[in-house]
Length: 603
Image (cartoon, rainbow, N blue to C red):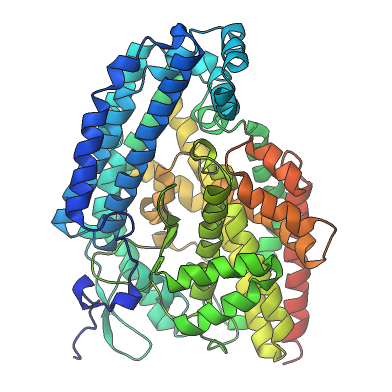
């Protein structure tokens, strides 16, 4: 038997393959100094408590103190979590991350009095403060967001209690992360070349795209054999997390965890329900695509491990990381020269941690704070999928860059609801570029298939997750025990509903819920679907050269949290309170499905 191919250690990587975190802190000693300084600054918090009634100047000083603490906390936290994520088995950075998380909780507790104290002031008193001190004007919307939540903010003592409990309440999520990323041991499987390879989160995605069915099946069954083994543990961590969401909603006088999660950004719950309704009505399109996949793969039975492999054999295009960077610059060119210059800066200044190594957090993300670069974590493998991942995460990072360069710190971030729009706009632009530049019918068919897979994975799959997430929160609120059997049975039925009669009911897929980190994020996943749909509308406007389309889009990138997200999107040209933008996205899916069906008949 050949020796199993192992992931490299972090220390084995070249500098060019890693992000540069020294602009945040030169070294860990600098982190320690900032940590100690902030700890000392927190001692000043009681001197501001009780001063908001003392007039406009005191009100301003308290706001500035509050924001200065949060700004430094974010910087400290980002450094620690990036260091931890690059190798979750490194005990030094486990400790740094734990200290930063603890400091964030302490900061929240020390400042928990602020919003309740703001709410002891009448609207007339607050308006008087703004009239008296013009320096407060920049904080008007910031304060309005607090006063809008009067019915859901508790007393100062109760807010402090909840803030102090945040670490305990987050323990189940932290346990899931450590178990999933550091402690689980996956089996050895064969890759396409017949080599023994150690299965990992990153490699699993690559093997699911293999054209060798035996490789896909072995990876699929190998992965889920581990999750089945730990299904009761994962049911426990997920249940505790759901209970946390329901508990917080109840004590804050919300009717449900969903209402609580959406209320901060003034997202109507109808937006969520509309998504589920429109997707449910269009499931026949997904069933039709699944049936086409079965036909093109020429298999008697279609399994869930057949859902990601190219349907036309080996991928006719595969890009190295360096090639992918060049393609990204061309594909994103419709966004203008200024946008492209920012992308070039990301590549030149090592914003990106590129390759997978032992202990590295799985998946990909963009992260940072107001005072750091918008860093990107990848687990790169040469494939079209990872090209899309690169432009996706770059969309996040450039969005963050524009926001932080344009807005003051108080509005220097954007809501989760808006977060996936810039990233998936980039994906849409890349698809259009590839379809315009690739003339080979097989390449075009491959790109179309990739788009349809991406649509399936983003709108259909994430809506499936959203339906599951809402179900388990609702069931827990009713007192239903969320056992592993209960979760797995429901998930298996839900998966069958989404994918339809052409795919087999593989028993392993019932455990998929146990490996999805987004179920710990509190009503996050639906925004992938709404964001993808909105991105399709924005990309279409930009590519058609509609008047002010690019200017409006860049305005969206620069808006940050300076207005409610629904309003930000209306200014960008998309009304997300209506069903039309999702229905339009479904029309694009159907049109490209039609094109793929016609194209493959010519081969």
